Image 1 (spheres, protein in one colour):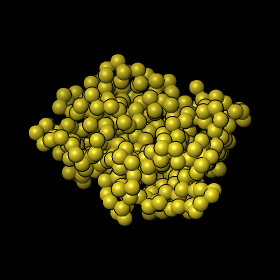
Image 2: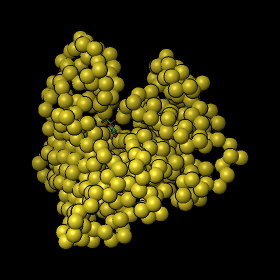
Image 3: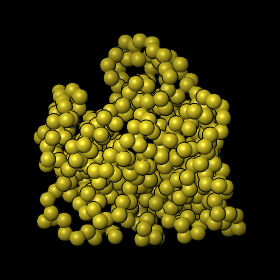
Image 4: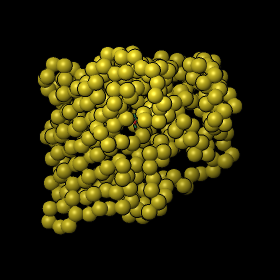
Length: 392
Ligand code: SOE
């Protein structure tokens, strides 16, 4: 179904969402939900009531709370967006589902696969709509790659390669809650951005990462932590502050060899200290007939490689996409669709399923979040043991 040809939703009651968390991604969720037009952001929660209020005022939400449980007891709220530091994902998602709410949780879904498994089970038992926010799948050209591959454009896949490279944690004075294992979990760079790469590759190819061999490294064994908390990507905008040194035990970098399915080989790197690279999610897929290369920093362009004819740099053009890919491109050719839009597309699928439970689930669920955590755990164990490991 085309996004723009919905049956009349005007007469239906607007669904109500609450957003937990007031950081970089919380703001994106508020904006993305509002763009749907069918869902109201009814409340904001943060651990500090003043912070919740300030954020709610900034984004124009009347209700705020310093206690998320208070919002869970409100029967008028249908869905919860969890946009907090990682250690809160599990307790919040669990409490929300126990209160009968549908849940959309930022990635990684939990700190461990054991926790994630419990969330999968609970969602199933309570029959609640559940989503892990692997939004990057929803760039129109990523959907295009998936459909073109399914239509036979690549032939059989031989190999995949790529990277997700950032530099916002390059300096030893760059600091954020993600650095701290207590709030972040055991893997930082791979869990935070490597899982996006893996989710994208698995989504496009339909293949599953079956085994891997990883080499993680923490280049900054010690970082200088500024006083007070620091927002994601705040980096060089921060005033000089007082710092204290603390030891670091989450990785800055990882290199991973992969096997996908029975035959396909792959290699990828992740880095949060890749000098000059901001958010370079780069994927290349090589097949017997053709290849794709896609760079998240130029999302409207898809490079299509050929052996016997000229290569092609295809610009996003919904009129040239298959019906299935076109529903994720809301703007015509020449008008770019970016990061914010990927959230909107994901939220659209999530709320469509909440509004009508007979609609098929077209977004990443808690099962996908669990799968990514199993990959994360294999990466950590492989790097520690210096061995190839199967992904459970
Ligand atoms: C920080 O690394 C971050 O905000 C990630 O958490 C997002 O998932 C990524 O898309 C952009 O960078």
